[in-house]
Length: 348
Image (tube, rainbow, N blue to C red):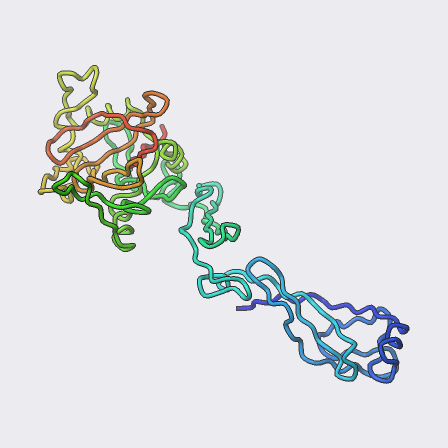
């Protein structure tokens, strides 16, 4: 890897200055003498400069250029300097940084997701110094990801005329997390009703993302679906539940609960106590649980919770839930800062 980008060196020393520095008996310096070769340079018609090797006097870092110098071997008062390029790329990974510090990078965060018409951008920040960051280009979506209504590389299933993603969304954005990321998992309570928490390993956290998708705040969820897709409304969830054969509960006008729809939407594995569904429509709903306001997580395997795009009051929005204990789809509402799953539906 080429780490240095050398600038052309220019020396502009007067004869008078050379005399003051020790006369012209060593290296002759001629006004506007330029070294364009990086090697020996001819100074006027007298003799040839003989330069020492370049020596780095100020090391470059991941944030600033360095400086290197070489000296005339016949007169140490005569020298020239040039810039050494700022470190980039692999040199600034956790092993790198001259005269800086060892970078430990945070996770990549998407600033702007890639679409079918433009590339995206993601950024990561040094955990020791937030002023140090790197950006990376996310390739523009192409091919199948941009067919049938646009961006998003997810397979879809058509139910009741609506095209739904077959998996929970797993695009990293601000205010989204894998289950267990940045917090702890509630696994029970002790005899004094104190919560028992555990910290998941990095591999466990990543496995949760791969299986269940990410958990988003409501504001993040509204913007997370790729081009050509959107966060479904309360009415679109109702249409889904009705289309798979769910029946309205006795208090439907106030609850919007659908009996029997959950069993047909649940995946055929992954639910606690083998309380799986029939997955008749390949929707494959999984119990991805949620992230609470204190930054912890619970109920993975026991329940799934999905945001709708419909707001209830200023700080709450409607969601839909499926539980392991029965076959229904429930409507609820939660604080918008909870983390819940997202299932996108294709724009019409």
